[in-house]
Image (tube, rainbow, N blue to C red; front, side):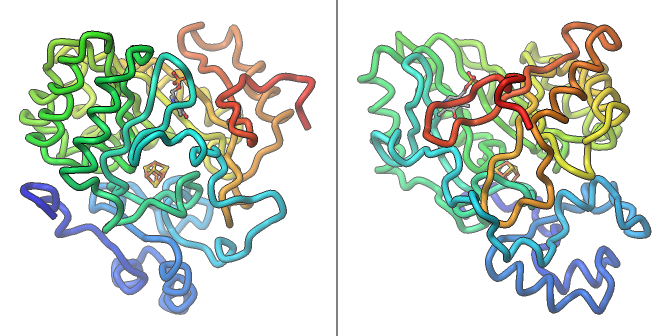
Amino acid sequence: MPDGESRRQTRTIRDARGLAAAGLIPPGAEAAAARVAGRYAISVTDHVARLMNPADPADPIALQYIPDSAELLTAPGETDDPTADGPFTPVKGVVHRYPDRALLKPLLACPVYCRFCFRREVVGPDGGLLTEAELEAALAWFERTPAVREAVLTGGDPFMLSARRLGAMLRRLAAVPHIETLRVHTRVPVADPARVDAALVQALRVEKPVYVALHANHAREFAAEATAALSRLADAGVPLLGQSVLLRGVNDSAEALEALFRAMLRARVKPYYLHALDPAPGVSRFAVPDAEGLRLLEGLRGKVPGHGLPVFVRESPAGGGKRPVARASGA
Ligand SMILES: *Cc1c(COP(=O)(O)O)cnc(C)c1O
Ligand code: SF4
């Protein structure tokens, strides 16, 4: 990987043997985990490993990252591209579904690989770093598409780039006259908080506002190191938004969701979206019916501050984009 991209990965667990050696799976589970890893990448950072309680089979942190044989079974309705990005890709690395904003996916590597990931067929450790020429073509697309007023960097996880490369990308986009705001979607502050260092924070200081949308699903992800990383961003004036996925066993109770949204508020993160699970292959063990999600969120209305409640959304399978989950579509 170029420049600093791999600098903090030395203690990241990337295979079944590593999980067993760290005591995160029982020795007898190694072969099954290795079979899953052959299809979907494993990554558990040192920080996340320390948050797990391997003695608890229902641990909400471990459930998000420890592979399970059920991942190799594709349920009816599950698809490789559940958000239907394909038809909305004008050039490699760009997804343009809404007139005023578009995604830029500069790489497909993440600090951790979530077992429920909606992009699991494409994300991975050696995945999809755009070449200089591809990045140039993607940036040129933004420059020649005046309808686009927001560039949303996602992937993969853009905070896996070196501060130098991320800063260069943001500066280039910020210099485009019709681009008014920038946004970076990331799991790094809760998955590998030490990466949010002074250089990375400095890279976000460009001539247009940069919003950071944090992906977190459980209150325990807001450990001291994560909260400190988020403070470094918030203290630099970066507005923080929270995105979560409603996940069976992780946050599918009123108590877990309330704790999650309150943890976000304490960390200066505004809960933005609660996503219904996208039907990527092998993720059905995490599915929660829409009616149950609606009931959980409605139960929190009035119990937590209004700005602590996200909008419950689902990606429409036909490529129509995110829609609020409505009662009529429920169950
Ligand atoms: C989710 C998404 C966005 C951002 O949508 P917001 O509702 O503004 O958060 C933009 N483009 C695509 C293709 C998306 O899937
Ligand atoms: S961080 Fe996001 S893109 Fe990466 S594996 Fe998790 S859900 Fe998928």
